[in-house]
Image (cartoon, rainbow, N blue to C red; front, side, top):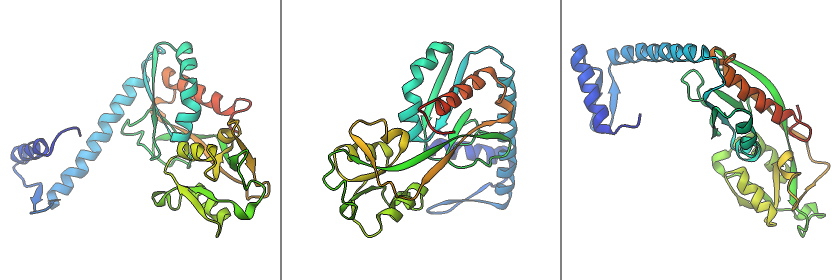
Length: 263
């Protein structure tokens, strides 16, 4: 909300005074909604959704290729694919300000946290339109002069930390590693790329990333195939907005271009 606790408390007290009801029980170490407070909260959520809907409808009515469009994408795609082509997008659409947000978590399109989003799981948000635009394949990669490159029994692996437990690519990598040692843990794919590049161990990387690095080579031809679907999602109210449409078309072209991600 970008306000401090004192401001929140003051505004809440003013709302209670205006409504002449108690909305929150103020306990020594926490605050809890009263029964009527919960009812008011539910109405407020509905009001917020309606207000956001008005804003989306108004924006969708703007016809020129102008304005700001926010694109949310997984960090690996934001940093290693999309960001490399921002200059090209700017040259094509000089009046569109593309705001690229690298976010592992899913954002809400209905609350206007983004206009367009790329996701690695099928979106299920009500009111949104989604389409599968590609597949991100993964492989094992190691530095070309990795000492144990041809000795699989001696491989050591670069994994994610415990905060990524249950993530599909982590589960896949640990399944391959089995009882072999984990050399190091990093919580972002850029760190995995760097660690593999300096010879810290074997990393499970998106193939578009590992294949493009001259210091790395793909190993383990007999490993289980792993991939993640890439979904493009937009709120239905903005789907035909020209600026949003331009961003969507640009993203799809990058993912499906020859040498890009497989569609």
